[in-house]
Every structure is written in C-alpha cells, then in structure tokens.
Image (cartoon, rainbow, N blue to C red; front, side):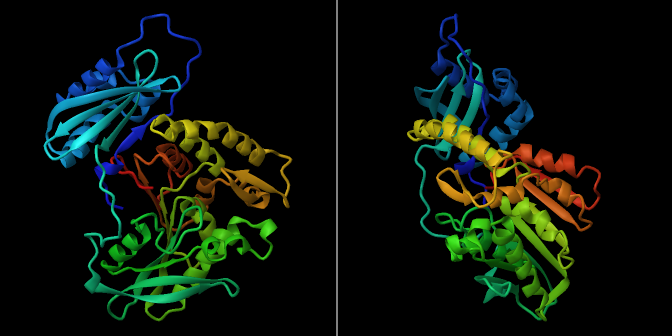
Length: 413
C-alpha cells in the first residue's frame, strides 16, 4: 500500500487518573503551539521530554525526528507558520488542534495532553482531505508484463471465484496465495477505492511472480459458510480454502510446485502458520501485519485508540468500550461451550470459532515450521501494533528461517 501523509498517525493508549489536579490547569493551547515550534526548529528532545511514559516508549526522540523530517516535511514541504488553535476535551484528556501552513499544504497537528500537561498523543492530518473515488494502478506495476485469468478455488464443496495474475511467458513461475484479513473480503480486499491485494498481485506479477487471490468464503456464502454453521471455525473461514488455492496452483503446468507461498494479511497472517502446518506443498509464508494476540483483545485496544483521537464519533466509541470488554470476558470464559452464539461489536459469532482459537499461539506454531517465514509490520498501524510484532520476535528468536522487517514510518492496515 502507498504511504501517504493522510495515514500518518500515532496515538498511544493512555492511563486515566482519579481525582482532580490541585495545581492550576495548564494552558494547553500554549503548550501545543510551543511543541509545534519545537518540532519546527528540530528541538525533538524538548518535545520528547514532555511525553508521558507510554508515548515516550512508543515514539523515542530519534523516531520523532524521523517522522518530522522524513515523513511530514518530505511530503508537506518546509514548515512556514502556525495559524489557528482549537482546544477540546475527551474524557480526562485535552485535545489541541494546531493548524499549520507548510510549503505545499496545510496540516492539522493534533496534540493530546493529560491533566498535568504531558503529551499523550500526536496525530497529523490534512486540513482538507481529498477523497479518492476509484482504484488506480500503483506506480510499481507494469501491466504489459502480465495477464490475468479468472479461476475457481474449491475444496470440492465450496466454490470461490478467484483471479490468477500470471507473468507473461511459459513459466515455471514461483507463486503466492493471498489470504485476506477478518470479515467478508472480496478477492482484492477492497475498502473504498483501495484494493491492496490487487496492488500486490500486479506488483509481484510485474516482477515474475504469479499471484492467486480469491473471494473469501464468508463473503461468497455469508452465514452458510460451513457444513454446520453452529460449529463454524477458522478451518472453514481460512485453512481449507487457502490450502485449496495452493493445490490449484500446484496442479498447473506453468507454476513451479516447489515454490508456492502463502501470504496472509492481518487475521490471515495470524492464521498463516496453521495453514502451513501439515501442508507440505507450502514452501514458505509471509505474514503481513499479523497479530499474535487474540482478536477480542485487539478490538478493545483499537476502540481505546479511536476514542482518544477525538472527533464527533469519539463519545459514541467510548460508550462501546464497556460492551466490548464484557463480550471479551464471555469469549474467554472457561465455561463457554460449542453450540451457542457470542457477540463481538454487534456481530454474532458461533462460540466454536473462538474455542478453536483458544490457546492458539501463532508464533509457537510458526516455530515448528522449517520453511522460510517473512514477517512485515508497519510501525504506525493501530489495528495490529508493534506489540504483536514483538510477539513474533520473541516467539521466533534464534530461528534462522525467519526474517522480520519493521517499517516505522508506514501504516499498513
């Protein structure tokens, strides 16, 4: 996915404090304006000194410098001046938006302060954000070097429409099966004008690698995606279809059956080690923003992050947090049994799905694999965070077949 200033954001989960401060309330507008000028004059240590504990851990001074000089100034141009500043509150936090003029554009720099004036969050956003309306070919793709074939991915029962992107020529081509994230995804993982799987397919095929992507079973068949919907599991949602895609590639005369890989995104990356375990046709796996922690715990963390961003929907999001926490307790309850349904943010999911994942440690399963593993993480992704990346690092430390790559300036979600 292309990096853009539209996606530059970093907020930390923050602590709440009981009681009211006994000292005079800080001038949050002045603090924010001063911090902007410290960024503008590259006094990053001074800004860092104002961070709260979690913000300091997430964004050290050297990374702050990289963010400002490499990402912000690199795309917006030279800093020129501060303009308006507005102050609001969100829970126990004070949100100050400072509008700033740069050489090429205007940006809002949003600061979150705790009651003592420590910086708890930092977020850059365009003042006016142009909305893309349609997908455009990524600049790294060369459509003259490949062609596409419509295919059907099937395990004998479920028929999933798919697209095979093939380099021109006779082969044999190394190939990869793309496994999407959570929810009912189409073959491109379409969200608005974005089609990240189509981007990947066209980019890789331009470089001689065949790519198979397919409509997820839960989009094609919705609630009837298992022989017994009451006992729906990740085997139904992910494993059987991904392996069927591998088998489809292996059966073709133009694909190198010894070099078929699986690349899973988000929850697809979380499940990728299970997909590979026991399937000898899979030569290696790629994990793109794959979580190592249970889904229900990530959901709560994501809600806290979104609420702390402020904006018109923040209060509504805050109200959902207690509900999500209760739902997570239900999912984790040791008395949870198959055959019943549980809720997660309004979605009804069979208990069998979460029971299938109970105790699942993707890094531990990956450690059993002798095949190459490549794990990729964007440093600014708030959905699957660097905490999960650290989980992969810890679980796979010392494994020479594993390569991990963190891109601090990217938000890959």
